[in-house]
Length: 277
Image (cartoon, rainbow, N blue to C red):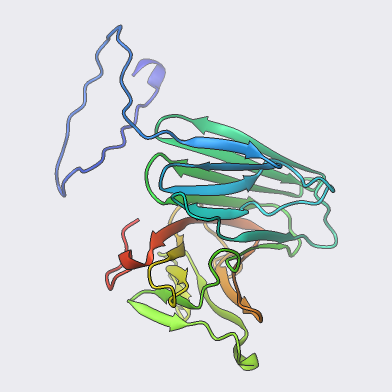
């Protein structure tokens, strides 16, 4: 290509071991893009962005009182109800001075937003969120230079109230909120190819659901490779629970990188095989 630029194609439904040839030809006609629209709605200091199957709510900036919101405020499957509530806790040594949310990519295939939390003196935390024109997931990549213990949480009590979680291999586990001895951490999600010491409650992906509903939505967090995911035990995604039915994801943002997917699925689609994402 001219000036050494590269062109990439995203190809759907390419068979295993198959190939397809593309040619770039000069043409005065505008190319037709037959892809579902990715829509973004700004309201009350938030941005709800998504396709027909999946939406994610992120903050547009600081809260009205000057406090910092979490990078993810909720998820939605299709036209269903919003699920989740984000909350964030910075070290007492840090104060967020600015939060900027920028749309850095926009096209027929995806939209990408970059959130920058600026605490001054180069203590910064970056989040990029990519929403695709199809599919029920968002790709989230995080990079932190805060250097002080801080974290954010995505509670799934609002709109879901999960009572079970599912993970590989076809393991459905009830979430016990009653026994005081078992409150707290119930596992963690890590980068799939991390080659350190594996323990039984380290997972590549976990789906949380209200099993008593049977036909409801499951919310899934899945670690993905790439993005220089470092400090694996510091940056794992912890699964936590509190009394009152509060099951939530807890994510350290002290330092380093993390790459993962936040997804929704109908419970009926969760089977005994490992999902492809």
